[in-house]
Amino acid sequence: MDEELIAVKTDTRFEKLRNFLINNKKKIIIIFSIILLLVIILFIFQDIKEKKRTKLSNQYNLISINFISGKKDNVSEKLIRIIQSNDETYAPLALFFLIDNKIIDSNEKVDELFNIVINDVKMDKEIKNLVIYKKALFNSDFDTENNLLNTLNPIIQSNSIWKSHALYLMAEYFYSKEELQKSKEFFSKILSTENANKIIKLEAQKRIRRDFSE
Image 1 (cartoon, helix red, strand yellow):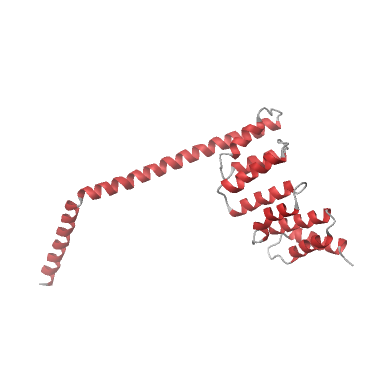
Image 2 (spheres, helix red, strand yellow; image 1 turned 120 degrees about the vertical axis):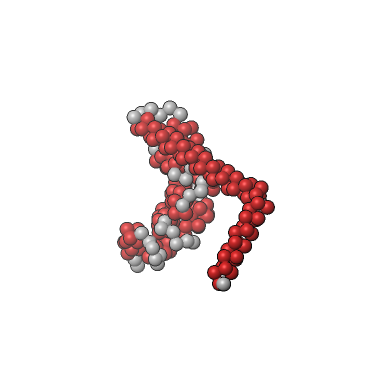
């Protein structure tokens, strides 16, 4: 008897399922079609993205090789186009290459390119902090105290691995301006930073003993 009840229940379930599939055939086909279409679009998007990154990689490598070998025609324009691509890897690399090799003379233009990378490129948080630090480092020779502090504030107020670098930059900045009390304060902050770079922390200790001992 129990076996007959089980068989009846099983048949009833299959009948309900069959009726559901028949009654909702069009909806099911549409749903599966949409899912399939989304999967295809995702694969196409990933393929396009990979091809774009490969192209950027080849362009960046070719620019680097040509520059080193002395072929410097339109190098700034080519690097700027890579920066404007907003690629998380090659936009920062192109910016650093441009700065390290002093390809652009205009500080305003370089600052503009920094802002593109910082504001428009989606990248790892610590890579972004590195770009922010590099911007402050580049601007430290001519920018104002307030501008430098505003630039570095996101790093200084965080637990970033670049925090001690930012503090050291401001300490050196104030020391060069002969604002010794402010300089000492920033050197001291390095000593109380938990994840401070060991070399920078050691250098800060040396500077405090050497330059600020009474």
